[in-house]
Amino acid sequence: MKKYELALVVSAKVEDEVRVATVEKAKEAITSVGGQITNVDEWGKKQLAYEIQKMNEGFYYFIQFDAETDIPAQLEQRLRIMDNVLRYLVVKAEED
Image (cartoon, rainbow, N blue to C red):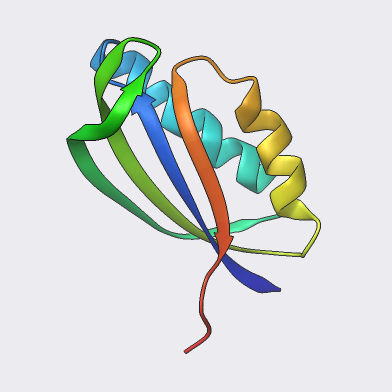
């Protein structure tokens, strides 16, 4: 298994419960395709570098997980259609 990191930006215009549910849905997407979550880092509300969907702020999350090499592509397909997700990026984490 390889180590990956998901950077997730969730809309700041939604209620806290909806935001938490969106992050849980993303975590569930990782585990449902065979990944194992190792760490979840919440950075909170931050200013976006540029406007996305008429929004200037978003909640940043960084989810580290272990998975097989085909899992990131499957995860991106699910994240692409999720409501309230402004941006996402899955990258292979550096090995120590």
